[in-house]
Each structure stands twice: as structure tokens, then as C-alpha cells.
Length: 311
Image (cartoon, rainbow, N blue to C red; front, side, top):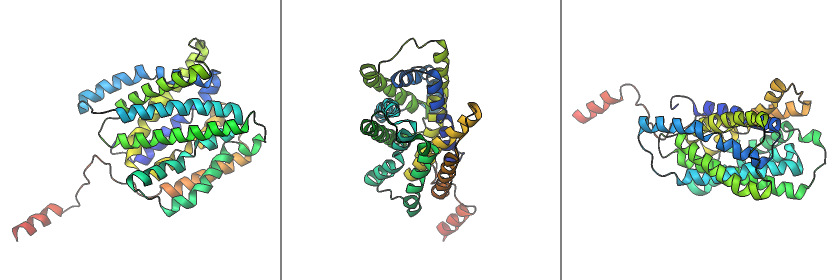
């Protein structure tokens, strides 16, 4: 995957994850149950990949950051589901995507990685586009508990940003990709049990129909999605990676139209166009070279160096 443009990897991963809301909705289970099965069913799929990766690239070191990142992901999954119940899917989707601001701020504070001016200009456009794409304009003011839902949504967005930031940091430390996802999945599963069981409960017998949709959620949203994102995110600037992940609600609208025959409203289509335009503006810059790959020397460099040494 190191030869593939990391932006394409993140976009492909976002496409897989964008199907998560559809599978959770079709399963009909609670947010805690969905988060638990999403992680539990992904582990048997990741273990063979980790073994193959170990034989190919050797043993990996550390892993604490991946587990902590997974704990944050589990908190995000449960809080986001709770936010949807209180304020609706549209507002919850906007709130969880505060990561697009939080992740670059963390990169600035820790690594002194300054976001570009284009990103600063594009952030309001991106958030407005996400709000429209999520159907916020058509939902109206109805909300079961707007204050509590807003707190849940912001908490989910902060946890999601922490997960993305730690995953990006951990991913720079070596060539392993499946092992970090496995460790993060174990951490997310533990957090979903610790938070979800006393709060919403976890149904261990959701039924075969729901189990099938949850299995599809594990394959797409947890295994394929995060493997691709984990391969591309460490090779991108924080602002570019976070921005590309904003394509998730746009792709979710497209999947809903293709799979569920949903008809997006004109405001949703306009929001999708805004997000795509803002993502293009921010992500059009050439990504930096991979951290674990030495840039190839231009033709003739070795001959010039030998001539200089001879002199």
C-alpha cells in the first residue's frame, strides 16, 4: 500500500465506514450492542492478518497507543449512538465531525504542524456542507433532549478526534497495519462494554437477521475501513486526513440512494457539493513522502556525487 496515494486509501476507507449507519439501522439494535458486535466480530478476521503481517514484517513493538486509541473509539461509538437518540442523526453527524478542527489543533500543539490557510478558509464551508448533507435543514427543531444530545455529540467528536490523532501517531512507528487495528478493536470493544452495558445494555442474542447486518458492519466499518485509513492517515498532514474523512456523510447519502432507494433532498445534494469542493481545496496539495520510505534520488545524483568526491 505504500505505493498508493494515501489520499486514495483514506477515501476508500471512508467509503467502507460510510455504510456503518445503514447496517446499524437495518440491524435495529442499540448503540451499545452495535459497538460490541462491531468489534467482537472483527477480531477473528483480523487475527490471521496479524499473523501474516508478523511473518512478513517481523514482530512489532509497543501497542499501548493503539489500545488507548481503541478505548476512545469505543467511547465515540456509544456516545454517538446516544446523541442520535437525543438530537437526531443530522445534528449528531455534525457534532461528531468536530474532529476536522480538533485533530489539526492537536497536531499543532504536539508537533507544531501548522494548518494551511486554505484549510482555515474551508472549515466553515465543510461544516456547513456536512450539516446540509446530514439532512439538518429538513429535520426541524424536534429533539428529545437537545442539551444532553449536544453534550453527547461533542464528547463523541472529541473521542473520535483523539482516536484519529493517536492512530496517526502510532502508525508512523512501523510498517504494521493489521496489528494496530486489532489492538484498537480490542480497546473499542472493552470500552463499549464498560460504557454500553450499564448505560444502554448489550443484547448478546440480537437474532440471526440482526447478526447478519452486524457481521457486515464488522467487515466493512471495522476491518476494511480502518485498515485502509490506518495505511493512509500517517502519511498525510493532520488537516488533510481529517478533511478527507468528512466524505463519510456524503458517501452515506450516495449509498442510501443506491442501496435503500432514498431520495436525497436538494439541500442534501447542495451540502454534498460543498463538502466535495472543500475537500478538494484542502486535499489537492501533494502529500508528504511516507515516513518509512526513503525518497528516491533524482537521476544522475549518484554520478554527480562521485564526481564531487573525486575532486
